[in-house]
Image: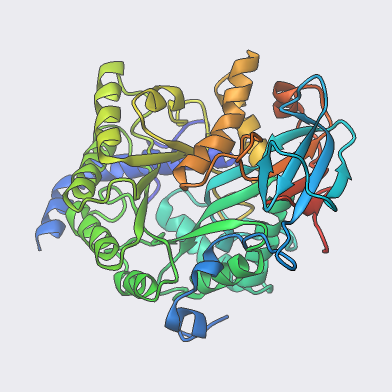
Length: 467
């Protein structure tokens, strides 16, 4: 693929302009090559040899460790002097076996004085690429790139240039996310012949190391294309067959792979055979993107995969006329398809409220973090909520609170996790900050002084506890 003259005229160094340019290129290329695509439709580690991939990870590798008990006694902590959501008067939060409870604390419960700090639910990163990151590495000077194909070439160059093993880089970034208040994430990991399954294995290793603090879903993401890069579909199949992933991905079936039916048949076939979910990157705009989206809806319903399919970015949805948006949202809701946005710009962010009115779940993600695509990104979901409010021109308190809810509750629903609302029965997953109220916290982004997961302190002052 080559640079296209329709790319955003305001393109700069920020990720939002890069994504906008990629979207424009994908949409234009798709339009120019639609007939060719139809013709195509008609016609670290060794290669997956570790013990983890040979047998597939256990359930304990995927989920946070359950609260332990000593001698049959409940594990209890009372967090005193807490202001949930910035309440005017402090209260005590009693946690027993990882859940907030309305009852009295058992004898011998640990007491933590929170000094009147605000308690907020920890957040969920619904879309992140931890395998690509250069976070914590020496500064990387990036080369010019303007198409998805060119960016993927830069990905490979950076992968070979970085000295720290992928699994250590991923764990470092994921641990940083925890310390900033992330309790769960969906990690998109590149799968291509250029990497084999090293990324899947590396992020899987990081998931196991952080399972006490972080829930992680792994998506096998074919960044280089499913059809255009031979050998990719076999790697996707292997990753799903061994149980190393939770979802299989796809990318711009028309605009990049130029094989709408062939790509989606491969991706959905793998999901159906191995019982995994689907999460497809869709940068295509306008009619091209809607065509791909409706093909995804059709396969989701045909294979009874309702509730197991997500489409990420979905740049074809913003800007749709209201009537068409409502009709498409109703189709997505009927198919149980969720969406994610990374709030790259005002014209590419999803209309979250309108979609939610129709029953479409929408998660918020941080996307790439200091990778070959962009020097920006920080895996801080409170900051991402801030950016969401910024691009939506939020002014009112309720608008700022809604941006936070998108990062906390929206992501939890998308990943099938219970909402951490700090009420009795809720998981005791929260962060503590100094501040006046929730809207002010979203704007000012104070330091996360403490992060609690299942009633356990997992981070203090931006660092993992015990690290």
